[in-house]
Length: 479
Image (cartoon, one colour):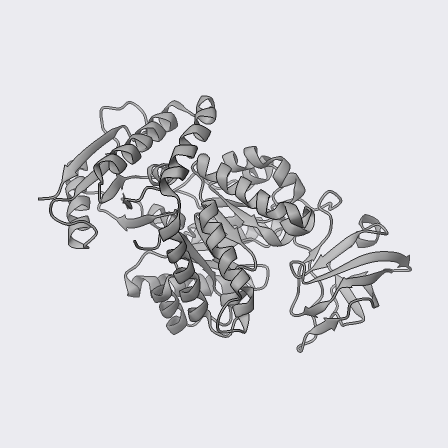
């Protein structure tokens, strides 16, 4: 069985050249992420254009995900060699943007002194360093280092989200988003989401005219409003760095499972992110715990696994992608396909009353396609889709048959690179529906995904249906 769980890799200084990008695609990268928190808009736009060129040369659709900075609080830049903070010592933390040191850390949050209380814990660099506020003196906080370690670059600073006065998306987020919408970016991740209203404030057009909006679940408020956030978004990211600082650490694995389960039940791709293969920033192989973490995320049902610093600044981005793809592929082989689909069918029944009629029809037909493919041993499920909704709907059931998503919209094809199990491909809009189906079936045969004698389940909409829904399922035997 080929790998079904997708791999998202962050493109940064270590991976931005064309040769490395090409090798990362060959190693298994499905989606390239551009993190705007650490780069200028101009550099990110150049990288986006370069990714497009390389993907076109390789002849494989690669999605581009832009991760907006959001109201992320960051420390002032650390010394070039980094700063090592020693457990048990005290240092000062002060508002500002000047360079930080091991003795004084500046934080770009003007309300730091009023919003952080004595006894509060602050986390730097996704929890790499944790400090406790013990006193306020003049223009700074005195903090005791509870968990020490090295800090480099401009690490994020976690302040309890219920005190932060910053909202998402920020004006800078919207400015950057406008620039990427103009170049046709496929997906955009929104940081620090606290409610569905934050998603609606993005204001982009619905897919595929606009990018797929990915909500990052990383605050306590987002967990409390999880249901409405998932419904308002196109996909969800379990951002375990800040989420682990916001919630008791023993709750994090259970929240991960809960978020993924609800995402898939509602037909939204779920991304598991943060410190997946962190040790591989410098090491040639992951720790045993990291390998188990990746496999368990697959068993949880995640649609995609995300690499951050491992490929952005790591010593061997190609090796990291290949390792992630190999671990995920092996875990896919052990996934409980029948158990997942049967439990999902029961879970989704409680959501039916909130669906539109068109969505209900598509979901019902995708369930029928999963059952038909399972019971007949179909080699693949072919979806003719304009927006990608049909593919995301069938992917909820994690069928063992391949999912082949054909669309006349190029952005839809790119957006489907994030969807579990989907092999997306562009199809000409000049063809009639019957011609599109014939082309898709022939393509499956020619690419070796199906052989003579195999059954294929074909899902598509018809001109007879009055709305926008997938209302037709047929079984085709290859001759």
